[in-house]
Amino acid sequence: MINLEQKFKESGIDFELYNHRAIYTNEDALIVKQEEKFSGTETKSLYLKDKKANNYIFLTYTTKKSDFKRLSNLVGQKLSVVSSEQMEKQTGQRPGAVSPFGYDVNVPIIVDERLLGEEKLVFAPGRPDQTMVVKVSDLNNIIDVLDLEPYFLPLED
Image (cartoon, rainbow, N blue to C red):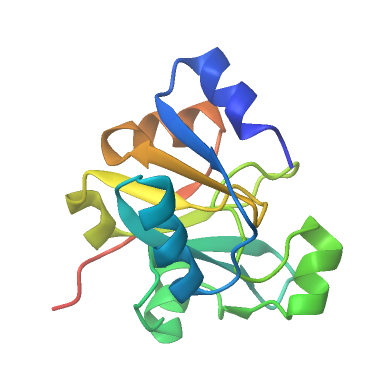
């Protein structure tokens, strides 16, 4: 993982970084959010793979159920979730603390377009004892700075 704090500072991307006890569940995340007094929309990042072993990140709401048919249609490949064991081996991250950005190799990001209507996004930057908050208005800049291949999952009909 690259150091997102350092990369964002170097690139002039506004962010908030909070250090706290480790979080692995949505319930704990909400408690820590109140304790640390930060605001924003809680997100989850799913580490996905296609049949050719290419990886993707799906950034969406913590409470949203994923529609893998729509995700697969969007990228043109059948997608599935990488097992916890394989994900930890590939990224060093544990379930519940998967970062949407910052991989040593280019991992395309799929963004749930509904998130674009929010003000701030809250996510784990690859560590369960940290939370990062970024402005949605900076998302395209983050994608450019990190040289990510973006996909945007359209709003459902």
